[in-house]
Image 1 (cartoon, rainbow, N blue to C red):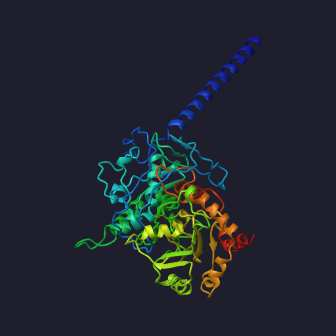
Image 2: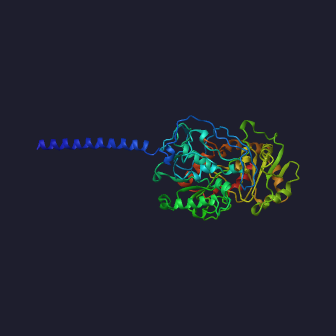
Length: 491
């Protein structure tokens, strides 16, 4: 009996050893799978283009490029400069303190993104790129096509986000590990659609020659067919897709199909609520095109001789009628510049000088609630005065605009004497407080490549992440913007 018992103990111990060894091998296998299994780039066609090239330069664009945008603002040349700024705290459990890295491990990323391998005709070919591959080599700045300047530039968010995703799996490009491309769509948080819709509208929305349909419409039709043929789209009806339509007239034909998708927009001015709304979509900043003022060179209160500045189209339709009414109310005030402006005849340089010489810069609703005038003011450290009741603001769930901008109801602004009395009554120390905050938050609205922690690209990815994982605050800060602005000014 003892012999049988000894054999039983020996057998039990042997099985335990075998189980422990098998478990160890399983753990090691899973570890290796996570380390190496998902770092290859989507699309695969870009993988072969990855080249190890050290780079820290920033892309610059041709300021004299032709402009075919229909918006009403006035812009020209600009430059990129390096900066470093802490990022705002995320509302989600996963840490948002994402530091730049030379190469991102997918486990470090806040957001895993699968990108469709759309033909280059949907993206970089629209820039005139002649590359033989589907994607440019983003390790080498000389191979990256430049985005056109002028008014086109203000809606270039599509370009910066796509470059950032391509660089997320490119060695020796230092960027935050906020979003990273993954190969398997089932392991992604969001599916990215790389169609440069704003550029397509700006450059290709008119019929050419004897053509019955414009290139822009053709691309939209082909995009809808492509998406609806994909299992990724059919699985959730496009709910987990991220689609860029920043220009208010972009995606006019296709947008009716994208009501369930997450859209990257400038505002909701030309969208029905069933297609676009604050609960699911992301509002991205315009790219400013006046020259960004360096923090150390920002003119002070006394150096800004003008009290109020506005330059742009004055006679607008629909919601923009308020510009005309304000023009006749305050144009003759001695310390106010309120004038028509355009891109031609150095309009952007004049606007840049005017904004940096002014204490307050007006952002007044035009054909749509938003324009890049607000972001030009921020880049100029000119305290924005927002007179646009229906405006949606980028990152407002984490950025308190009342600390650096003044909100005025349109109905109040057009009362005789109201606006000037309000602005003249703001004390010097309060303006300086807003000016200092402007200098702190300006990097949140800066587009650049490679991206940096807390810049516009990084902030957009964080906004996408919050939409996916966090409870929506239902616009608490938005509803309180006027009250908080008044409270701040009176404190």
